[in-house]
Length: 105
Image (cartoon, rainbow, N blue to C red):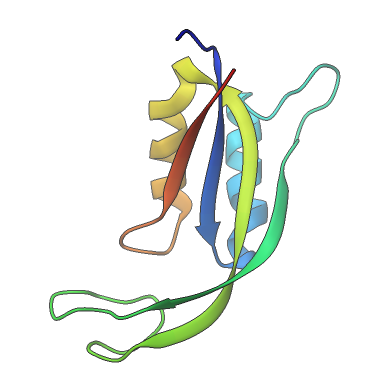
């Protein structure tokens, strides 16, 4: 199956959405038609436990944590995936950011 666009989902603290949006928009990947800065986000609740070798942004090693973060979503070209993931990892505060790449038909 051939596809040209993907949907990117990334979980991150709300305070980081604007800076990530700005860097992605500078790259030109958030343009849809005659609009740029095109993203959406929603609140998400989750659990995690930092393991022994982790350096958690939030939480304590060995303890299960619960918190609220945001799921930021946007569409981009398949050919831009690697550069987009690099920008996300540069801006994102987590050691292991969740980045979902979903093909769009």
